[in-house]
Image 1: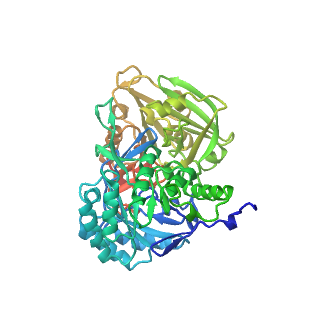
Image 2: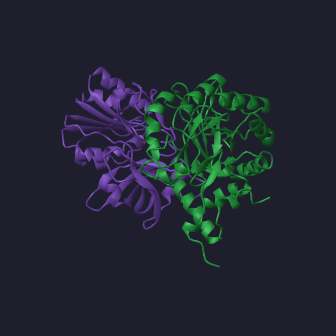
Image 3: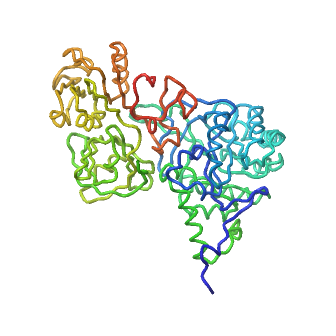
Length: 308
Length: 255
């Protein structure tokens, strides 16, 4: 049998009628608006750029220290600092539009109305999808408050859906008892896709100074330490819903990404790895391609959920 | 400026110069070509579980040999790992990163405290103008001899074991040291004191700040400080220490 070359390999995937040249995007909050990585990554190579959370007005975020390293991961409590939707539309979006990549905008709010307002404003912009962040553990209002109860998830999903002309992805929190029930609620509310997992809540203590390492005391754990949890949850969600899944949680390389895809993710997002190696996204794309060639796999879609 | 991608470089030497203080020279022609005083390099651990780079300020740049010097304190498992590196070992790094000092032509006062002292050495070397150098330590001094070729050095120790007993401001006042600009790096209480002193005496100051970082390239927003004006990038009163800093003019920031 003739060995496959890159030309023979199809990496294209489709979510909610939108095609992505490959299944690799960025995890919200780890890639700025894309501009921050412009010197390191050819953004046109990415399946999509998923931006940092965007709110109605600028958000200051939490006090420092905002991060703490943990073994095989890190805690963060940035608190969704962002310049607000006006600056996003005027400055960040035109920059992203200059690249041949899809744009997924992460949407945050303190109230359902704020999520709806951002979704409505973005509906008239040249963005491809919205990712509704109901899973950030580091803000007092909004974020995870909407994401831990199935009724609340279904409610906010259906509300935002009314205001968004773009397909919406609901980003789920792993800090729940039954991820399948939450995934079903998002689907019932009209989500076009779900993404998971956001960070797991955690804490570190500064023993020498007998205090918390994070000013916010509690933060969100990310990195390879959480990967098995993420893969398990994607598998469970994929067995429950029929909408596509974007998988993330500790992906460091292509082999990690393939675990998520085989567990049922249509796309994957690289997050914390960007902090450690700014070129991680491109390396994951190259690695998936190499895997497919090595294993004579013509179409990435043959790998999605192939482990059952 | 060329892009500071992650790569492996060679350790030329790595010696303990005081308790917990290490002095490392790295072979890094590309870093040397671009680096300015006050910039930093992200160093990576070999131990895979410690993933985030450690930002360490550049102490000295040797353009002729293409080498760069870092003087660092062991404060955790990552820096402890660095302290065990030997000549010939390689280490992953990224840099130079951040905005360093802006060299002014006016009479200078260079003020360093503790492990904030090393990045001031290259600055002292490059500043051609008249300058005084004030170094503050808790007790044991280090690197002070290296400064002696570059200006008059005054030392403060908290226990009075060397130089003036007290802090750097006590030295500045005791010797009535005058300047048009202060360049400072050290613990936040010291920088606060310098900021107030500079404002009270109507002189400029450039302060090098420190904060825990993840990415080191301005993406994660972990290492912010409060800015006096709404920052262009953040659109709030936060500046990124890794990107807009680590060196700021004193009036740009709130400590």
